[in-house]
Image (cartoon, rainbow, N blue to C red; front, side):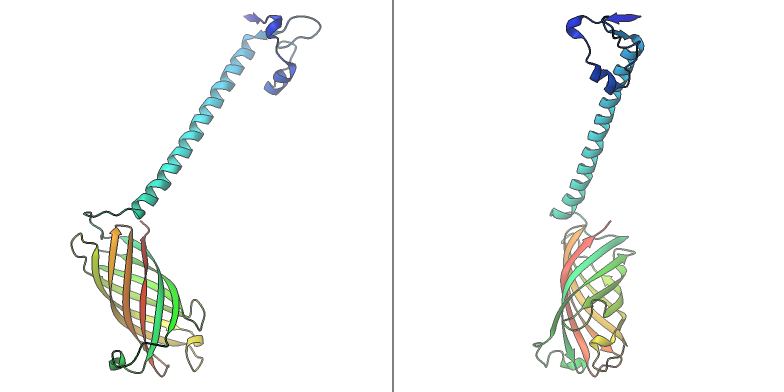
Length: 235
C-alpha cells in the first residue's frame, strides 16, 4: 500500500536524510510527486514511540533519584519526638572538635587549671551490635602534630533513656601515638577511659560530648581529652 502526498505537504529532502531513508522508493526526484511507502510510515511511527518511551524512562529515573535523595536528607534533618532513636546494627560517623591538657597524675584533674591546652579535631566511626554495646575507632590531631598522630580503638556501653533522645555512655580502649606529640620524639602506646552523653534528634543524627583520661606509655604526663561533635547514622 502507498500513500500519495499532495504538493502542499511535500517532504523536505533534509528530513528524509535525517531519518536515514532517502531512497528512490521513499522520495522520488525527477518531477514526480513524493511517495511514502507503508514501510517508511511504520519506521517513523516506531521512532516516535521509541523516543517517547526513552523520554518517559529518563523522567522516571530522574524523579526516583530526586525522591531518594530528598528522603535521605529529610530523615536526617527532621526532628522526630516520639520515635525510638537507638537500635542494633548502627553504623555511625563522628565529626568532632577536641581540647586536650596534660595531667601529671589522676587526682590533678580537678586540682589544676585546664587553661593552656591544645585545640584540635578528629573523625571516628562506630558500630553497635546491640542497642547497648558497640565498638569504634577514632583519630584526631592537635595543634602540634599530624592528623593521624593519635589513633585509638574503643568499646562503648550506653543506656538510652526511653525515647527522650538522651543516652549516657561510658567507653574505654587503647591506642597509639606518634612521636610528633611525645616530648622524647618516639612513638608510644596509650590506654584510656571516659564517659559522655549523646542526644539524638532522630535515629540518624545527634550531638555528643565526652571526656576521657589517657594513660601514656613514655610521656612524663598523662592527658585529659574532651570531645564534642556531630554523630551521623549511615544506615
